Amino acid sequence: MRKSLAINVAKIGQNLDISFGSIENKPSNSIHFNDILSEWTREFLETTSLTTPEEQFTRLKGLLKLTREHNMYRIEGEIEFEPLLECVRSLTPFREKVTAHVSAYFVPETSAAFKNSGISRYMNDSKPEEEIELESSDLETYSYNGNFIELDEFIIDSLYLALPELPLCKEDCKGLCSSCGTELNEVYFEGKKISPIHTKNCSYN
Image (cartoon, rainbow, N blue to C red):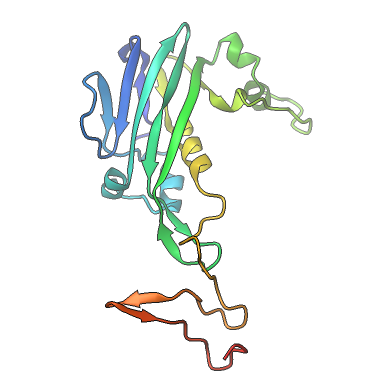
């Protein structure tokens, strides 16, 4: 397993396209990853059941562009993925296609822009009991050290933020019976509609 998804800044030039997963017509000046599994991303991928390289290749794809702007790099693009979710009403596991439109900046760890940011003050705070207010720009700023930009934290943050807060297996999900816990959604099996069957002692029988 790779340690991180790292890009050498020497390869970026003025801009560089980065792709992963099943992408058609990849740009010529690009770096491609078949999957994004690393020590950083492993926990998220396990949680959303995207653990194998095959699952990631088919269920997770993205196209990002890194652009140099003075001494920092802007990254933007789009990531599509199909995480395994649990319906908040019926507790049914299901997959849903999610699209994340992403944008952020990578700044040198030694730069004034990073040292003055809320993220830097939070990381180096000697009095953790004091509150540090983060600006929206802080949440869109990542640092890099040396000659490599590591994309893992940025990608995982973007995917987490794109997950639905209240996932539903379908918009009109009826949830579970409050008495016996039977799923109330009608299902189809071999072309036949099957209605919910409550347990014998259910008060709704």
